[in-house]
Length: 182
Image 1 (cartoon, rainbow, N blue to C red):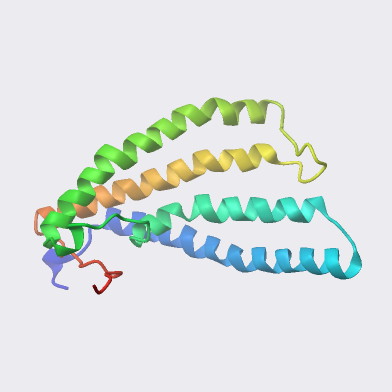
Image 2 (cartoon, helix red, strand yellow):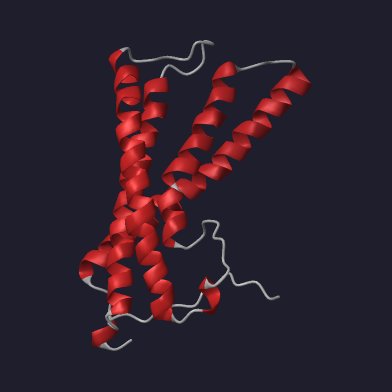
């Protein structure tokens, strides 16, 4: 890639941060599968039941879902209703992505943050615990909502920068890599 088409340092750092979080959290899927397997073996082979282990799977699932959302966005892995998008040139796709980020993603993230702030704050105020005697950190689980919003906002900023650079001709656009053949 020639120097005129190189990613700016800020964009590269934002993407690298998202990649670091996403790749790290992806390993949690393996841990979650091992714990779930252990739960099944303990219950059906040994007749032992553990609420803490069951809740830990729920916590890990929430972490994977919420903390990897920005990474999924970075890698264009979210579900897209693709009627015209794949047939558009890079500039057309950049306009759609920019509009979606500015007028859908960011406002929805602000809404989620505003609506969940009191929910998370009240959970922290009482250091909410599991009512079933499981993990004593429900307040941390609920805090993942705000962490997800922050991570998605960071990636949204990177997306805006990328799309503006594509529209200005300073970065090449990429064709959708998950295109279906009809």
